[in-house]
Image (cartoon, rainbow, N blue to C red; front, side, top):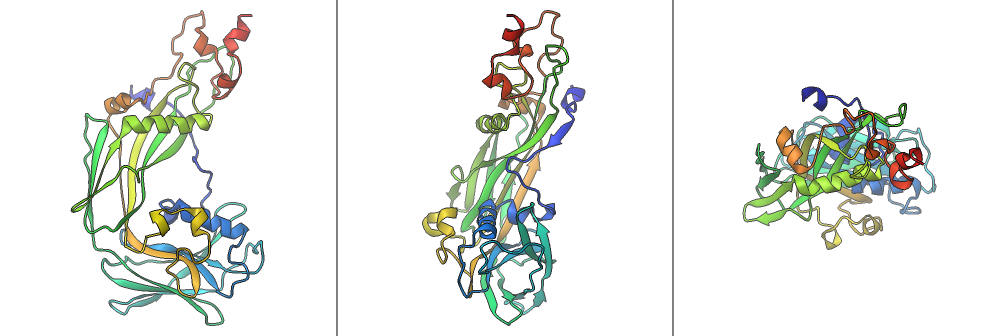
Length: 362
């Protein structure tokens, strides 16, 4: 069994194509993909073109990590901004509770061939219940700023049961908002070991993390929030993503199965400023200037919170019970081919064309 579980030589793939140069920014951009979406739009079509305000800010202070990040966008008149040009702004943060002030370090990052980011970072832990001011200063002395208060400390617990496909989650504390609430399944497709006709190429296994949105599942309680992770329910959604990415065949094909490598629960327990109009982070709405911003002399949003996450690997029996399967199809088939094993082990092809076995038997 162990050899089967470790068998696929996997190629890593992302459900949404990204090429972040530095993985350490996942807390800033993974939790809040809507902000990345808005930011990407600003790189191509600037909705603030013609304004006299200097900068747009996106980011948050995270009490759950020792390094803080913020992304800064210069507001320019050009429809398509220059690339490979450093931003000459300076960024400072002040702990208004203690009076400590620090300057952040600048770094330009290429997220892909078309989008680059101006990131500023500083190595410190945001303190719970402290108020901070972030300032972005232009060479001419103009200041774009935002003030936020880091919420109080929280606790969370994932009840990892060895014999159940359901895992209760409790988040305890004064938590005005939960943002980016998701459960990620790190799964891999399982190609068949054999394919007919002989010599038919078999694609390598591909690891594809799939995130399930749990915003509509979580419920607020007297002392926090609670939710129930349901592997059986989520398996259907995970498999559909693999199917849409042409990584599995249909249920009767030669490569219908997925195997689970691990699960990760993640969210941001956020302060009360995370309160967009209508309670939803709608990119079409938030891209309108002035619709949702806590930034002075600029646009965007700068929040605060505590990122929480926990990963684990369910037992083999639990994964099998949820619908995952590690055994490759078409193992030890007889000299007389069975029809499903004669379908091409290249997903999507077998679903859109007549099975090869039908062509073979004509």
